[in-house]
View 1 (tube, rainbow, N blue to C red):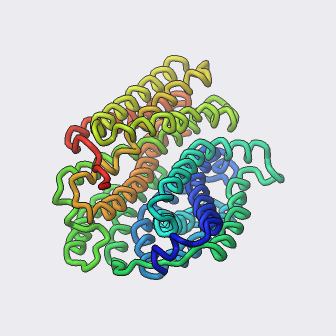
View 2: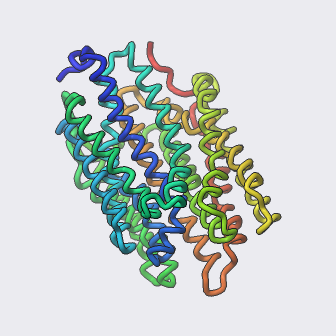
Length: 472
């Protein structure tokens, strides 16, 4: 089906199909944040180790990162609607398995599969919207897409807290997974009925060796970070990260020889893209891991309820929403300045949060934590919405899509690595055999997050001054 044929479909069908796409994207984004708030409860209920809890959270981001680019290409080759339906059905099914999991191993496996299914769904969303709507109505469709992103970021932790704390239907934390089932079933039926099928005219092939090598490299980095502390830092925990280096070298060589490389080597001819990739990786080791540690510190250390913890953290996504529009308005003139300023605000706000938690101890109030988080969110809104456009500004226009795909995958990989790194620090500090109390271990651990935001800020002078100007 051609783009023009789809663009002139009956408006009600397009709107219903758009609703299906937005429902799927909402599920994915909420699932990325809804688990973190109840993770201490899940760990306690399943008698899981802290390492297992890290896998439950980081596993989703890891498989999402590794499957994101292949997921987009599968849609180009086999049909975006078909791959979207496979991903949606798989996401719904794995949600059921997550909700029914009786032990940590099953929940971890289901979360890994759930992340992979999300990576089949999400890349199709923007392609489907682009195909269904002509240029005149596309802006409104993407405006709704952006609104759903904001809603998902704000509602995820609060929804998880409310579902779990109110013990919906006696399900406890399992309700955060089962809630996906009715949404997934309705969205699947709507997609079958109203979503058009489309394929790329000249799709790239799937780079299976590249996927295997980058997956192996990621595993050799992540596994010792999460499991090494629990195992007493054995020799394999030291050797595995070292083994990742030659695997990455082999991956780079395979990419240069591949007809359809997973990561086009030409992207790295631009210094700013390489620097931007490092910046993105470092930055995104921070946000999710910050909330992981904060949730443990507030719930286990201070005995706060899920709802109080969620409401305290609500300022972060609200701050992002408040400054994103302002940042976009000045992206073409002050993109780099906004990114650097936003990162410095994030680093300073995290430092204030650490100082307040350290000074106040068990007497710290919700407002004393909420205000620094709001400020950090304001900083993140200034930079995150601009990062991809600024980083790919010097890349040829015909490679911008590939660059954006790589950056989004690195974002998810950074999230997984951050959870592993920060979890390693926290586990060492709050060791039950004699470590620090969670109230003191949490702010000490968060020095990593403040440092990550600061290092990312120090890299911004190497980026282009502005975002790419969209051709008229």
